[in-house]
Image 1 (cartoon, rainbow, N blue to C red):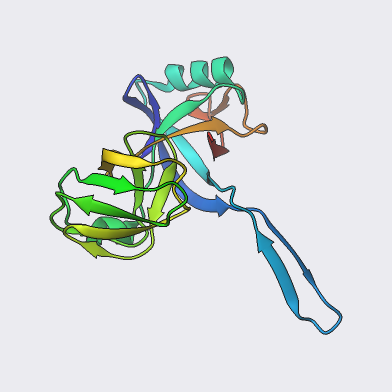
Image 2: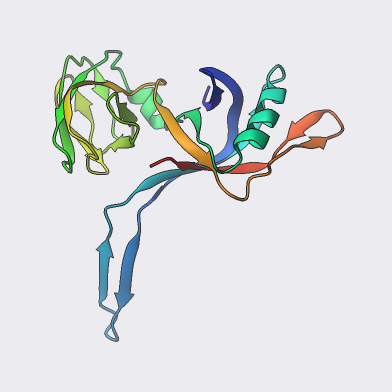
Length: 196
């Protein structure tokens, strides 16, 4: 189950609809001849919009988190993986990774099985989330997006349901709760922004 964590415990699970988007600033314009020019910036963050289902025994924790942390303190979530990734991945190992800052590929050793395109990954020496851009079987070169934000020297990589994302609630998320039928807590759709 993917969702919001507190002290490593799942307190609310994500429900549909759920979207994961890449926010990467692009400056562009069209000329009079309709030729397009654009410049892509290097900044990038993941943004998630989803409904949330509080778990019956932890609804109080979600309510408390919304009030205490608001939009100014980070929270941790279990990063949702695409269903195609889940069905295709066969790697169960904890690979060791090496790579240089700003590179779009890293060298993986100690992996057996497939790490599929579209899989979200996180390296143990920093908190940025990356996405695999080409299937990789066993060890070798793994292609990623966005470019590396830090050097990697013999670090481990999370790539299954162990990918944790530090993020903020967006400014418009309710800082409280709403009851449906007097019993069910419903905070509606929330937006989460990757902490950079």
